[in-house]
Length: 330
View 1 (spheres, rainbow, N blue to C red):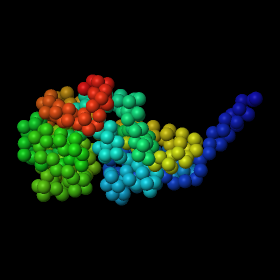
View 2: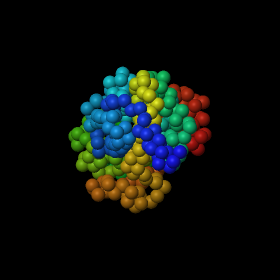
View 3: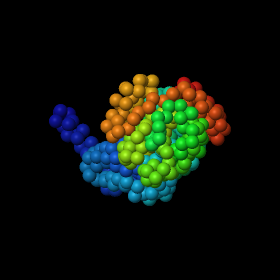
View 4: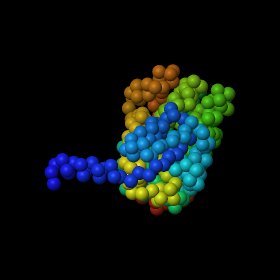
């Protein structure tokens, strides 16, 4: 076979991939000022380009689908084919996903990545398939910290009496209690006004959520505590996924790599062992907006939350939790 003939054959083989015409609805609850959206756009670009336009990806974002619970149910029902969510919510249907919200389970972002993107993390994600969803990937959702409009927060004593917003997650609620704060369960769209009106003194969020929802306009102190490293995750309706041919599944799985790269590199990584000046330099996006950065006393915060870890071992599964703790060096 001549070189030209071989080239033609290879080209025709690539073109012969079977991509049926379809539109994939890909839903998220957060707005387009967040890393998830950057990843969703990267996936859309990859899928549409490599399918020659046969497959379209419709991104549904900016809260049009309701709450995270609503988005998860839409994916389970097949109202949307793909969706973003987070372990903070999926733990309600897969208890083992609650491992991610155990305070200070991961010592740093590297330990989180090695677990999440390694075999144990993939096996953990796949547990959601018993709930009618195909797990595609974990992804970074940034670090977590406390933005507040009162004072610097470094150690548990500083939190005394402060009303702090949390996600509707009992582990995070109990973590804020362990910090000596008063947790207030609230969805993100309500936080800004609540900070302005004094309903809240602060909120448990990431740097990126502070800027995405402009919380910096209502609260001028931030402490990157990294008490949890709850990941985002991409899931698909399982019945829909199983109906796809191999070429289409392979195309989407390949595009997941583009999604994760665009998403993960968008977030700011902060070394909690670094001096506060270096932390502030990393968080320039906040200091430029008038926010003061406080270095946390991680040893004191971790010690205060150790009973929370012990309490939730039984709910999640003691043997499983202790196996993960050993694997990640807790």
